[in-house]
Image (cartoon, rainbow, N blue to C red; front, side, top):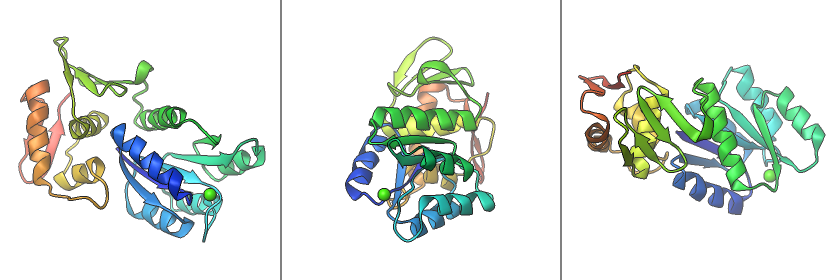
Length: 221
Ligand code: CA
């Protein structure tokens, strides 16, 4: 899952980036409205966290520009506590959810997870993603297979498997998987995807992730 955070408070963004990475997200940061708008238009994010008070272009204008395109990525806006008019403006501009500052990271995380699951119509209780005979526990980063075996996943394995499970039976190219499993600016050697696919096959069964020669991989339901 690839997340964009548009927020000018650098202390806050650094903290959020660390926490979201630990929760299995690839995270990109933008510190002003212009950069944020550009990145939201250029990159296919799974969700966006958007502050409203931003330099260069405010969050409402950025959101309106995305929705006019239309870019329909789920967006949660960060608003000043008790500023009900900001929340109304946010929803009118096309926000999917809001959170008042200051907030607890745990609440932001579950709201983002809920937005992403809703966008993929995979609504499940207890942060368990249930698809394809697999149960992925987002809190503990484990997968339980149909035979009842539970496997612990590394951060990269977890991110990769979650992406497969949210896009079952679709051919996913290595470059698309790289985009959603790694951050924008880190080493993007797509050969490592092969290594992690091999790890996943060992856990969930070799025939579950099919190689489409010259195209990519597909998780078969
Ligand atoms: Ca701000």
